[in-house]
Image 1 (cartoon, one colour):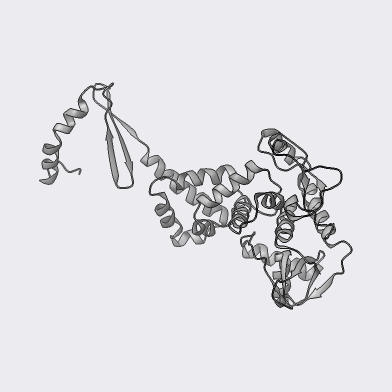
Image 2 (image 1 turned 90 degrees about the horizontal axis):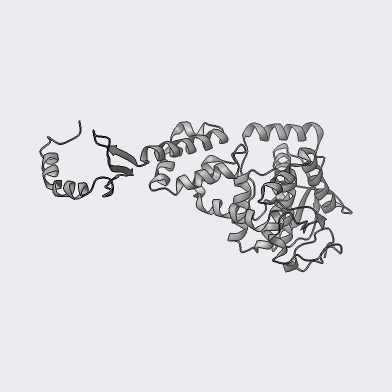
Length: 346
């Protein structure tokens, strides 16, 4: 087995000699130092506590870039870099990234054109397809090379499915390259493919609680809505959780599809699309919020709530005893007035 890919105990890789396998109890303690299974690097996984969140921010962007480069260097260390025809290389069997804007892609492609491909991609021989390869990381570099009509610099390694997704996930995590919803979808896709939670945690460098939140949101937001919104880099877990809760309200999924179906929606940027959908559903939720009806004497004698095409009147006997029964006895008279038109709202 390759020493550069050291994974969790379930895939038969030796753990780093300096650290033992964590127990279930250890995983619940705040701020433990856990091993990154891909490289055997000691690095704290993301914590759900405020202290963990603060500690994760230390080091800034330069540290994240350095980590990503370290991952790539370790993965290609001691390996021969070869040039491959991009037409022989397929995308990873599990998708992690959503398409960015065309402007971003063109800028990246021009950088490759002007300066060349500085960092090789990592591929494996494609299982059961002789002569073809599959990307572990470097999808954008591969696309740029394909469009430029040049060969792509690559390192070829034998990788199991588990090793590939861990390499794929940790390379992106090192760069903080994936947005929240891309990470959530990646986690959900891996679970759908029956990867263990330990492997998914290793791929995304998260703890159990954070992984559960990622999978929960990705599974509750319909696939077509996520595709319509796009990666939405400006919005993290809190705003996606708000959107998820709004979608769970009665009638809001249909309302969401009406919003994304408007022609102007597709012309927005991905962040604008998220905001438009969130704002549209939130405005509906505000309209649907129960309202009190007060009599002229100030008594709040009833509450009115509307959900979709349903309107509900609620009477509280503690506020206006027997008022509800009084209205109930008048329903036939009120209905007759409604039918003959004299009681209809203008």
